[in-house]
Length: 324
Image (cartoon, rainbow, N blue to C red; front, side):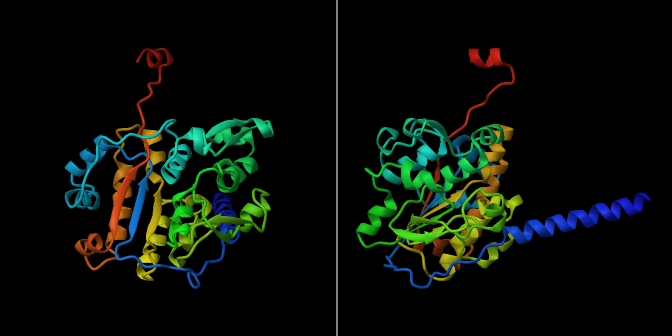
């Protein structure tokens, strides 16, 4: 009897997994027809979520971040850089892409009250908060409204500025991506069945636009875009998409690539966590290895590695935390 129950449980698990796999599948995009103006040396900006100098130096000292160490030794390290305020990713990224502060780009934080709509805007900072604001609302706000209406039309993103100068750009897994080219999102059935996003949806982004399973070029990412992979918003997906551009010799003058994985582990383990940096370095190694050598990689491309913000220790005891 016990064996039959185990077999039945395995069978149900396989069926459920197959169902999720089928619903998560989305088609690939093609690079053909993209307008490129190939520069002598393109710029690739890799944003590592929550990358901080002190744990970075520790990882390098222990020999666990060879790629970041190589780039530091053959480039420049700016330890004095600080984040814009408030230190939340969407606000910082809005500042990074527009060169303006929240009073101008109008994205004040991860969660805020929009007076003209009389509702809370949330881009997803916690399960409880997402549930309270409505999963559909959070999905629409973070994927669509953040770029289409929340980010002020009075400021231009770097993608828009480059397009005005007849230079192409790319965004890979960046939540802030507004540009001058229209893209049709490939919404998986899992999302449309759950009524989180409509079946047909267009957004304006740079010439090359990749955002998890919603907009994918590289077939190698078919195994990294399921629900348990955060629908493609992960380090491996980003590295694979960037590698595809490198392999196809289609790197535009500017590319922003986002490595998000470190943030979750640092939130869970605290700012002293090193695993997130090690994983980010493995992704950077993966990218640099696409060239004949790392020396060739820095010769052909200008690499910028940027941490968007830091984190602080929060103690378990409320009274103690308030006194620190």
